[in-house]
Length: 419
Picture 1 (cartoon, rainbow, N blue to C red):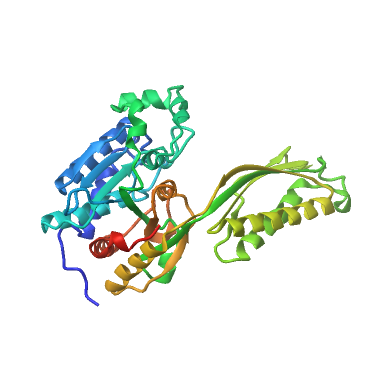
Picture 2: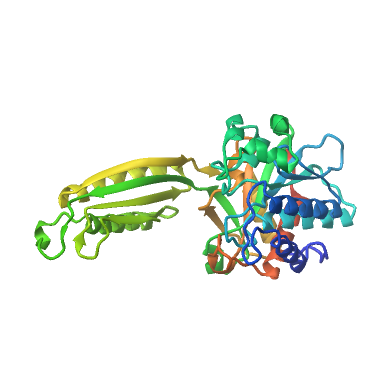
């Protein structure tokens, strides 16, 4: 197996430096916070445009605030591969979530351009503006616009100041009335491939710099309440109590056991509140959340049904009233088999052991799946930490990821892919 020839454009240090430079576009000097359609988002978008143009692409900001860079194919009218990720962040974020998936493809195209090489397809690198959903009560509006599935009603949504999404777009320099025109045609786009940090510890545990994603997990979220009877902590005997918090502890244990019971399944209680909340009062009510995810929808639904039976039995045995409210459902999205195989081969050609894994987090690729086949390449991140200032990658891994992605592009045959 031979490595791709060295290239200054795909230097890991340069890719990492590009992302690190974008991190200066933040609301706060000591924290990275860059929300959709903010002045910081606009400044970062302009820096991305400059990088795209330097790499040999044409670049623009579209009607929904995405940055779109295009590198034409060898022949006019060639189909398009879309890649990219998001440049908005959560509050007090890490630098590489999303942003790496924009910088690394730009570097790969700079390499192609420096060699005067055009591929049998055009490439669009899109820096999506709204993946995190921090400012407005919506998410993936940028990728859904490209897929042609965005709901026009999102334009009326308001942020915390009462300003609408439509108003924010106009202030950003966009035309909300042109959003529908940004939708791509399935006849023109043959695939979407997103590179992203893993945001988890699996690749690090495997000792691998990259991995091929099999699916983006489906997720369901619930609000649960256990109601018992509050009472004096010193006067009610243990065998006569209807302690909602003790019941919640048993329920949380059952949730953890379920999450550990099957490969790919994860279950999390992320928030809990006991009332009345006094040191000398038996808790009479507990409110908590449940987030359950799996790479296949049937696996998730079967697990939910089994869990509901277990929790009902716990509540009945303890004399508690259980209420379960389903808040959210997002179906799993499978990655395309042919694209996964192509990524695997690119990884192997770089002398790296292939490892496949699901994505537990949502990504713009989910929205693009309604337009075209999708795939994702994960890159190892330090400690599996993400959505945190401690988020990190190495220059060596960035370079490895770039060489894999460039190899993938140069060997990809659009005609060999099937919907």
